[in-house]
View (spheres, rainbow, N blue to C red):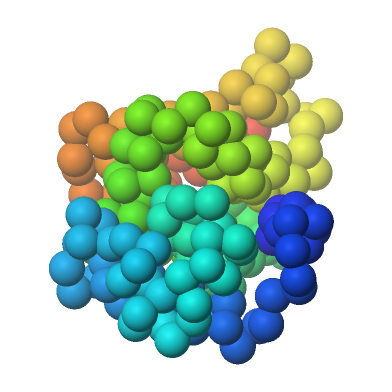
Length: 197
């Protein structure tokens, strides 16, 4: 997905300097970490990153897009897609790392900010779904489809993915609840065919 974003931006202007890109993403993350999403602006990102404001606007249409890319980069680095040969082990590892990441207060704030922005800005909502949400769904789908033939036929992979991310987003946005180890075990139990536990 990051490759897609790079291709889209390259069509709008010059290729990005990786040093400048990292400076912008780091500045956005730092601002949110110290002052919250409400304090974030393209102008402040440009000032604190040392990258020109027009350059930032050329590479990212909104501050939410900067935040989304920063968060997606963190996700890709911190939450690999395991392939141990065991569905139960892969799910447990993926969910454990995902929920551990989701317990970080800064990450929680970023996710909530992006979800809120998606409700207010239809154009961003489309980019958020196509880039961040679909990326995370694809990761879990990859794990689940390795064992698709052994699950009961009425349960589609897409439904199982909905269940997992539905629980996560519900706990983030509607009824804030701690992501604990019991939740990992419960989700693995729901997703794992009988006998694979």
